[in-house]
Every structure is written in C-alpha cells, then in structure tokens.
Amino acid sequence: MTNRSTAPSAPQETAAITDAERRTRIDLAACYRLIDLFGMSDMILNHISARVPGDDEHFLINPFGMMYEEITASCLIKVDLAGKVIHNPNAQYTINLPGYVIHSAIHGARPDVACVLHTHTPAGMAVSALQCGLLPLNQTAMRFAGGVGYHDFEGVAVDVDERQRLAANLGSHDVMILRNHGLLAIGRTVAEAFVNMQRLERACQTQLLTLSAGSPLHMPAPAVAERAYQQLRHAPTPNPDGTHPPHGEREWPALLRMLDRRDTSYRD
Image 1 (cartoon, rainbow, N blue to C red):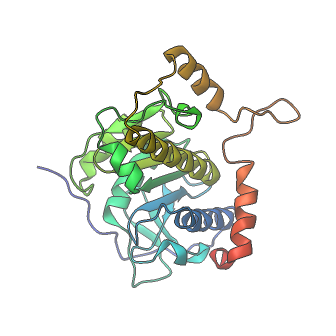
Image 2 (image 1 turned 180 degrees about the horizontal axis):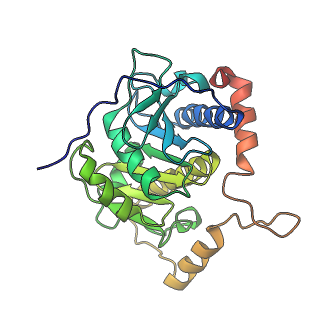
C-alpha cells in the first residue's frame, strides 16, 4: 500500500534561535525574495528550504500561503525530517505537503546539502517536457553538462515512498530536472543553491530561444562540453591565494546589497 505523508503535527517545541540559525534564516528569506525578483516564483507555490546549522534533522521552509515577496527571516517554519513542526510563529499557516516530501528527501539523503530550491518556471517546465532534456548549447548550459539528474513524473509529490527515488535520481548532482514538472537545485550554502538555480533557469531559457529559431544547431564537441563542465563545476576565477570559491560566494554580498536597496524587511 502506498504510504502518504500526513500534515505536519501541531505540537511544537520552544527553542532559542542561535546566531547561526538567524543568519541562515536571513539568507533563506533573501533567497525567496530574489527568486521572486528574478521572475522564478509561482504565486504561493514551490518551496526553498535550508538546513538548520548544527542540526541535520531540522530544516526551514516557507509558510504555505505567503507570497515569496512576503517571506521574512522570522516567519519561516522549522520542521524535522519526519514532518514534525518544531517551530511555527504563525499558527494560521502550515507547510506545503509536496514541499515537505521533496525537501525531506534531499536533506535526509545528502548531509552535504544546506539548501534545496524548487521552481515551476515556464522555461523550466518546457525543458522538463523535452525528451532531449538540457542541451550543452552554450557556456551557461555547459555548467551542468553531464551533471544533471532526471526524475520521472509520478504525480503530485505527496507520497513519502517517492523520496527514495528523488534522492537516487539526484545522486551527487547539483541540479535535477523533474520531468513534466520543473527544476530543482541544491547547494552547500543558500547562495550556491540560488546561483545554481539562476544559471539552470537561464540555460533553459536560452535553449528554448535557440530551438525556436528553427535553424540547425551548432553543438560543441563532447570533449569541449566536458572540459567546460569541469572548469565550471567550481568558480573558474581563483582567489588571490589560488583557491576557488564556492558558487555564489562572490555574488551573494552583491545580491543582498541589491535587496537592501529595495526593501530590508526580509531581515525581520
């Protein structure tokens, strides 16, 4: 018999929010605002989660019913991998059930993942329905050449037994295309997850523009696509000490400054 997850439980524990969790809440709220600002939100649907620092069992996710532009650091709901609500400052909201299933699957299987991001953009949904999937048509797309997971559509993700297949199909990849559904990106930080998604979204958009031109495609040689993928797996421009920063490390301060110029309420 198919197992179905239940709505998050009402009982909640009261626990102090650490400085590390507070910083993660601010970054996650910023990520929601940025996804909206970059045109990747879908009204109240979709979800972004972040693991609570120092606690592999707990993650933060949006209150189901709020627009992305409304999300603040303090409104985020803390839930555990079993679906128990640990902290919810707004009792009139719960969490999106498919959000719990998808995000608990990845956080439970990938302890290296700090943030999981899922979207339903027109470009992402369109590419998810193409048999060819994502093509290495340009440098942006080559960031993911050979590094994309694919998960076949099984219906709305409300069955907990789908979690094992979601995690297996993501594997060690940074992004996954949910067939006939949308896009998913992960990161070791919230910043990295956002940048991975922004680049995956841009790759999908440019693929659709390229295909719509109706002209024969100029595909790079497989060896070139693989070389570009290996170069772009890490930020290609090194730091002064020769190390390569994680994706998003350079972009994130600038993105937060951009948000702060518009509206600082995400920090509340």
